[in-house]
Length: 161
Image (tube, rainbow, N blue to C red; front, side):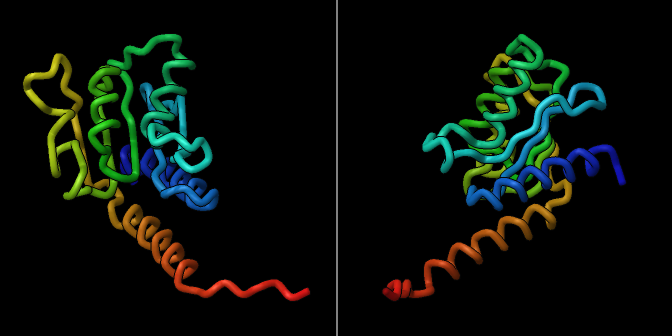
């Protein structure tokens, strides 16, 4: 197992925990050197806040742990390619590198739909590496949404008195 795969497995564990809480299963870890300094999963439903994506949560934790918003030596490992909000936050936080699992051709912003992390007009570019344990990330996502569809398709039965 490579270093990237090892940290991605930690992010996958966060995604599984998010799914168990009823959140879209995206997980992330922040790494400085070879140490995980923050970990998070999506909390959008629990917080009723669209900005509580796993990547934003892990950036907030990382800043709190370090006492600084600058993250030039930090790598973020996340199970799904970040959206525009999350990719932009990584650029603004000056994250060194983002490693993601599942590419998102529709709304991924680390090179798939857009390239926010590598846009030359920005003051900072984030190195982006995709496809690490992509199939594992895909499986978690597909399983979660299959369960959501199954719950929605089952008619509710009235309670018996």
